[in-house]
Image (cartoon, rainbow, N blue to C red; front, side, top):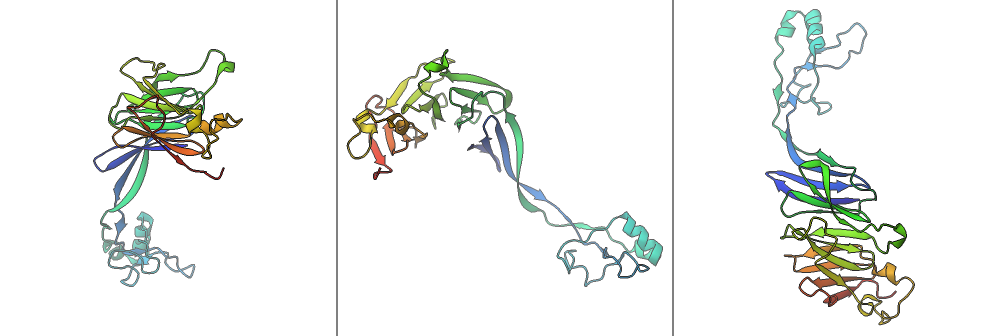
Length: 283
């Protein structure tokens, strides 16, 4: 469902991936692989039943780097081949065998699973966000946002919980969340009602009270033809924010709903978006 890059170390890169209920941390790096070359035994089967199964390789069979001239692959040899050579051709043939050489290492892109973060979400995970401190990340579902440490896979801290006591009173769900790009304690999350809330983890452990809220009025959140003031049946669906991101240094927030892109100034909460870019003007 989600892929987010984390801060890398040395020549390695790290990324977070999430399906419906589980988050995984992956290490992506280039691994040097050595393979063995320059065998002097060919392992082609004999054309006749009485003929030898193995024979010393000739210059035509083996290239300069030890690869097979016919297939381009390094021929394989084992102890059974050496014993067969000694039995069929005498001890001199086996004594002439030379040790294989290692080729120059080649870089192979490799991904390895480092940690699995699970059993913390009752609903499907819809968003991931890595922190600028390089130690923590957020995962969110419809009703909760959890804070994880990249080094601790068995424990998560619930920092936002909007689940009501009675589910019949539920009016909105969390759609996405994002960490501030430079302040590691500030994060924002958006909801299906078109609201963006900013919270600071330094204020309280459970961020049930937001520090700032950004919400477009009906006049600015409607259609491009000027009929936004009229509340339509699908107005709540249209207002639902599908994604939000802090822009640049974190001064602005860019949000996406079904009909438009909106640019918000973090210092101007309660005043609506400073710019609106309509996506489907023909609707």
